[in-house]
Length: 361
Image 1 (cartoon, rainbow, N blue to C red):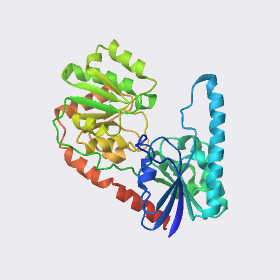
Image 2: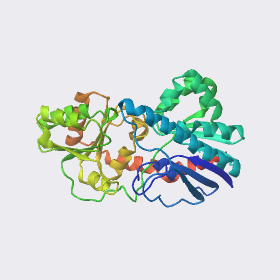
Image 3: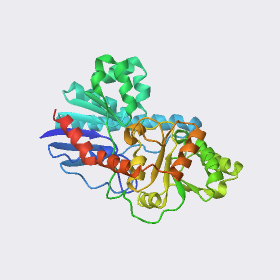
Image 4: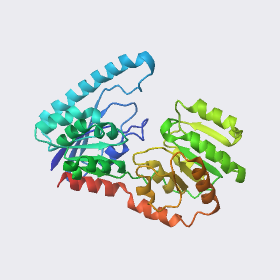
């Protein structure tokens, strides 16, 4: 049985949605997994089959702005160095055949493991790969270390053209959804348009608010609920006030992962207005809970929904978003059948089996 040291975030009772992919692909029949994670508050999720867990103290507070950012980043660098040293000692002790990191900040761990003869992998869960592979020198260094480069974003494939000698290294991988948590409860739905995600530039809520204002003119009984918190809360609220639609917009703030499935189930339509994404798991969650879905045409969204899905939207185009939301209210074009196919295609068993085959190749 091969041993893999997996370095990434491990979900806990408080941070349930963090590290889902790296957690769910553990528990392989033919692979022993040593999971090394920064220590987060809450009780760790139950360990998967053939998996042991090591948590190491880490700086997990978000970086502040202004002059306070400097000492924070210095402290963070020290914590990364200490964390990496602990994992390097573990590599010397366990001598794993495989080391798989789930963030480029653990790059030095992979370099050491590569020098010791281990096969190394990296998975990008967001768009951090862009900063690396848009730099030819840095990208070449990373490519020389990793046997395969995985990403939840289909955008990773374009770097196979930039680094032609490493074309086969770049592989998009899938997320999935836990059908025991996210499922259609068959309750009566409200005329609610739902959005889920932190209130940051990436999610482009200003475009969604503008589109919803137009939707209200033809569908005055609909409401817009937004789940999430972030630095743009005040500006989003003010935009809704300026447009005279605040009575129809509700900012729900951060909600627990236990409550989120119920919020999906009460909603009629789910909208993802993002300007960029990795693999948008929220689309699968919404579909599994019975929502109709409108999404911007970004990264892996067309891969999930299908390139011909009729309710894909041009990013940042509030008129296109309004038209697609209005259309799905009037006529859903029998998309429920498509949704069943999508959910069958994206399962954690398939994702885990894919990775297990890769490790044993």
